[in-house]
Amino acid sequence: MGAVLYVPCDAAALAVGADRVAETLADELRTRGVDATIIRNGSRGMHWLEPLVEIETEQGRIAYGPVKPSDVAGLLDGGDHPLCHGLTEEIPYLKRQTRLTFSRCGITDPLSLEHYEMHHGFLGLKRALEMTPAEIVQDVTDSGLRGRGGAGFPTGIKWNTVLKAQGAQKYIVCNADEGDSGTFSDRMIMEGDPFVLIEGMAIAGIAVGATKGYIYTRSEYPHAVAIMQDAIKIARKAGILGASVMGSDHAFDMEVREGAGAYVCGEETSLLNSLEGKRGIVRAKPPLPAIEGLFGCPTVVNNVMSLASVPIIMDRGARFYRDYGVGYSHGTIPIQLTGNIKNSGLFETAFGLTLNELIYDIGGGTLSGRPVKAVQVGGPLGAYFPPSLFDTIFDYEAFIERNGMIGHAGIVVFDDTVDMLKQARFAMEFCAIESCGKCTPCRIGSVRGVEVLDRIAEGDQPEQQVELLTDLCDTMKMGSLCALGGFAPYPVMSSLTHFPQDFHVKPLTDAAE
Image (cartoon, rainbow, N blue to C red; front, side, top):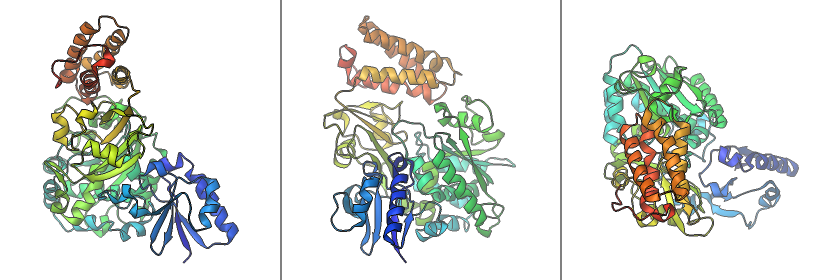
């Protein structure tokens, strides 16, 4: 067998020229008459090194990056190379991680069933087929898995509700409408390890009695859509999906549906409306989707990371997964480090690391070299934390205690040049643009919020305007129908609380506001 080289097909790598590198590599190998195979793998998640080229050796894979087409010839000459990082698995950023959900991402060919099965693929599904639905649900409950999409709701409780619900038809809906700023873990899984999502959805279907699944993602993810569609066809042809899942009495099939990029469709009821061909507007609850969801049927709606975590729980057992983490936050979390940060990328670890460790020890501090002023955790509606709160550990309850939220686990770093008044205004403007318009606090409150913040920026009675802004945020938080309007106050009030100097006002007396 000839040499084996790896060049990622992940969108992050493609954006910086991975296709051109792969083509140049193939041409160079052909010119040299070298017998070699180029595998287009997923990304390892070290985005500052993309495109990352790996060469298989007897000692393991050797990593080179970031590689440009002009670097290829020298890379193949052997010997020391300035872009060489040694053995990939020994790179500190990777070595420090606990990769459970992303254990195959960047290692295998995303569309190779053989690769997937070689790396413990479908062991969880095979075990699930030997269990009763109630036993599967109990295992997921005992694992402590909570929704990785942001709400942190216990997955097992949701599954149990659907299992017990009456309905001739039930559905599994995967919420892959990844719209938060600084997040890309869902896309990485769909592009780099699609079979783990298929396996997780099939297990969910068997657990609750659902025979049909939908992956709802956004049209801005063309590569993820294409790879998922190909993977579903491959799984169907292999008998993993269809009328008989792996030769069992269970039926489960699935398909991909594209949304038009509305942020509010990340909210589960808006998503369901969009799936049904309706406008993406939030539904009032109750009834919950678990009782009356897609087309009025009992429906499990889970995030990509939640469903992709299920196979390892079923394979290694509930206790194995539960032993990772802290408090009520069990398992691992794929943290996405972005913004003004030196080592941007995905870092999967057990819950419990502090923001300080993530930003400095792992992220390497700011790319600009300037001091960190703030980080936003949880997307565009997440709270801004100053360095004084960087001792906060990555744990659902720890963030809630400090008026923040983990959300989709994206961390966006800002240096000391950022204007927090402008960031607060952006949050209100974002909410105004993305609001579905159903409820008044969100639809009108966000527009008024922009106006109030503009008056503060103009120096128009800032103290009085801040009082009005605080009251407005409280109304939006308590009165909005969904989290879009309900969470918009988080970035606004955290900016005002921790960075009053940017609003040209005195510090708030109660920093917990």
